[in-house]
Figure 1 (spheres, rainbow, N blue to C red):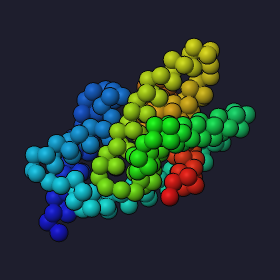
Figure 2: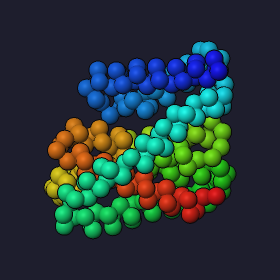
Figure 3: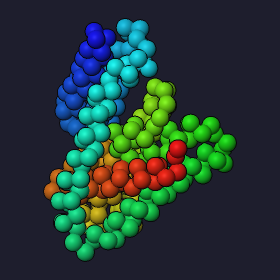
Length: 224
């Protein structure tokens, strides 16, 4: 019981500090609390000589809370769909294609490289937001850490490159910018969308939630 309390305290304290750093940085995309908290947790485990697998086992209640938060994403998703108007169908068709390419691309790359299946499976949900991706991965702490790294790098690249690609292709509608940032950059994309145009943040949330939903469905079909 004491070990569980210590693990929960480490997780919550790390996230609180990461949130403070995120606000202090002016909500910089590289200071995202999820990544910062991960670094702090890993540092704490190293300092106190704790086992990562034991930490994961003692913090299952937090994972259950994240699963509940994922279900609650349906509320902003439904509200944002009403604002899309005529863009609703094109945007959702694009989301389906993006999710399919993301999942299928990882599976195809893993097959071409003869990568171990557990490694491929850990990277496959990289386009989903962190709670969804972790819930789709079965394995030890090392595989979950690989999933976290894949999700973070995907979100970072999506948040940094998406505005450049959209400007280069002369897409000027801010609603599309926000939605695509949510699809390609998930939580990190939300930070970028809020910085660019907070008025359409709900559309970015819709893109993130929609991609998480479709990715979860595809992973449930292709992954055991």
